[in-house]
Image (cartoon, rainbow over all chains, first blue to last red; front, side, top):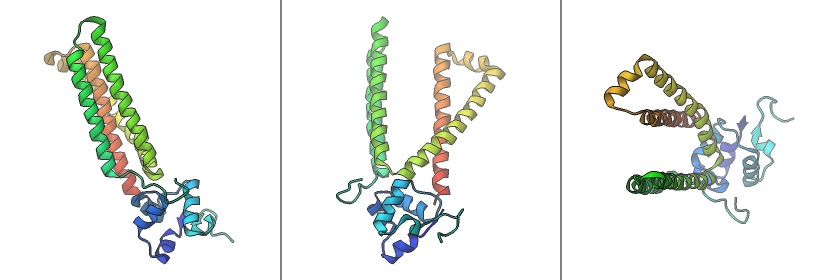
Length: 69
Length: 148
């Protein structure tokens, strides 16, 4: 699953450590999320959405379905 | 997560090392207690040994629960994956080694060393555990390397 975490983080000028602190996860986890090699649980996905004040589907892209129309 | 403010920071390497040191210390105390008290004759020695080991295991298990609750979900996933694949793989390798060794010439190894049957059983248990832990460690590192 792809996501826009890196872009959203860069727009806010946050480091991976900053985002990790806001999410309550480790910096390594943020890195794994950004590279798309780890898909978050639903609770963490909602937390990410809250931190960026965006809906989940605006952050995560289901590569099997393609971008939402 | 604390809804009133920022979520709590997950445990890092320092906490893990501290926990290992703490559990190791308890293990040392339990081992010393078992060495000092476990050779009491009859049921008393057995009861003291069981009590000491149960206490040590309970402390270790409680520490694991505390630590598990303090790490984040990716770290938990890494450990679950590592324990299943690495632990199972390591156990398989250890089992093949032990069974092969026994089939080929277990007596040739055990007899000169003067090992009794109970010592061989415990030795086999520790060998399998060590292989499991080795596989676990390798698989854990592989998980994080794959998810970088």
